[in-house]
Figure 1: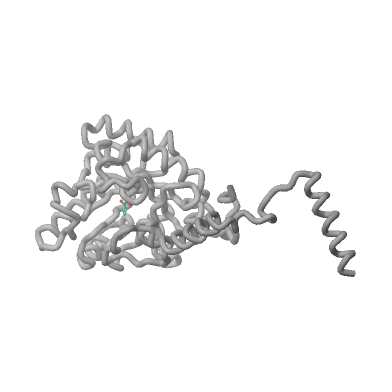
Figure 2: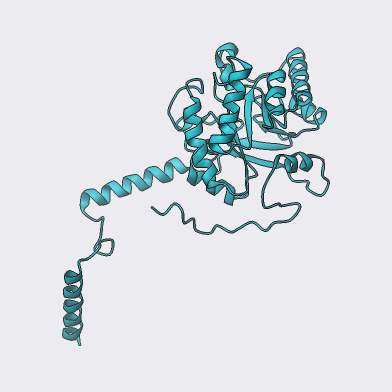
Length: 305
Ligand code: KIV
């Protein structure tokens, strides 16, 4: 196993504009700072290796999204994802992060039954996986207030909220009409008043995202919400092209990991089948065998001379 030795990883130099640890107050202050005028970078991760790579790339916020269900576990929606599955992957991500803020998605069903059960689950994410904030979907201001009062920062998520796929009748852009846009803005203001630390805006018109971003004091992080948000988030598998369907309009692919991995696997299979892998240099040698090999090499050199 060599995943723990990531080549080229350089520790990030730390300063007030680039702290050694990203926190919620830092991200909140960043929105209003003229000195720190860069946007917030956020990315999903689901395991140790990709979390570590994201951290070492300087990504500020890492979300263990319940998109886990689709991109890692092969479900066809986020709905089947369980608390135990989220905890399992969040612990792996936690071990890969040093600097980035760790946010964990509360999966469908973990905050819908009752506020007490929701709070208990939120506490589990903090205690059992080291989450620094939890994310919940929808305009649930009173729940956000309850969880925030228990000292757990909440990232709210509005717009195209994948856990509402059955109510929405598919994954459709939200907030397109004047009324729907106003409702989303009202929800965002209510969530902020309830204590939401950050608001994720997914799948909404860029004009609406700009209005919400201007109206809120807390940062907005967009996905399919245009360039006007305070930060952007993408699903890791979309970013590196590790999905099996065409990318959504808002995705920018920065690599083709599926092609890279496919080619590596095909080449490996061919080498195994032909006997080209492993070579002698990739094999361990018994002591006697290696001294015999040395002796025959010496004889061969002597013969040549
Ligand atoms: O589950 C997820 O990955 C998300 C982000 C895309 C915001 O909720």
